[in-house]
Image 1 (cartoon, helix red, strand yellow):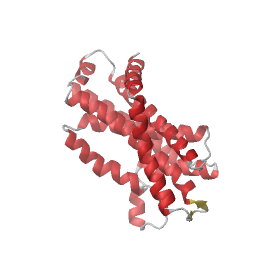
Image 2 (cartoon, one colour):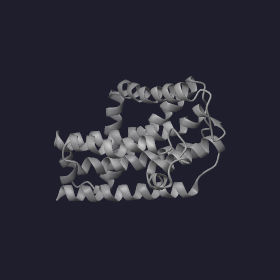
Image 3 (tube, one colour):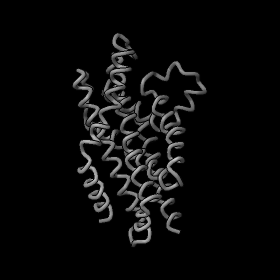
Image 4 (cartoon, one colour):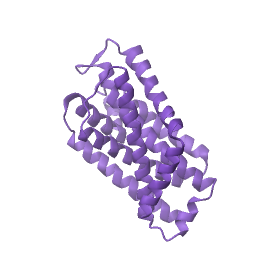
Length: 244
């Protein structure tokens, strides 16, 4: 019941701001496609595919990350630090596990919506990637993972400046380094080894493999699931610590 209540509240918030949220989601992928797809890679071939087709899965991974992370981190941090309404959840008989799950699921659904927007934008540009159940499932897993990270970050920070720093040092580097716009094969070994630990690397790899080759990267799916569990546990623990 707690999960459905949170999801309904977030749905009402989303419905009231539908056009604002949708227009904001369109801008970034549109710029990426124009700048990197048209400006850089019109005649470029990467790993046997046109660059435009190559970057769409990366843009999907990138945008679902930012959308799911931002949707939850912003909402929870504002209600916790400024509105002081989040503490009502904590002192109520609500289960911390369900409270956390509800917020993370809400962020994951927002991320899934952003993936739908990007696919529609790519179709307008004449780029059609292979979409199947596995592609949608990985988009959801990626959104779930970063919604969990967003919830945990929102519970740990004490000011909006801290959230901006977290985004600058964690989210922004992953946006550009995790193979979203280029292949990691030519990166120095030490740098590539570090990037392999980052969660977005595995999401990008799986989505690209499904879209271009119809294959699934089993190890990367396992890594993402481990990250989902870790971020969820950390978020639940942060809720308990906040309630003390």
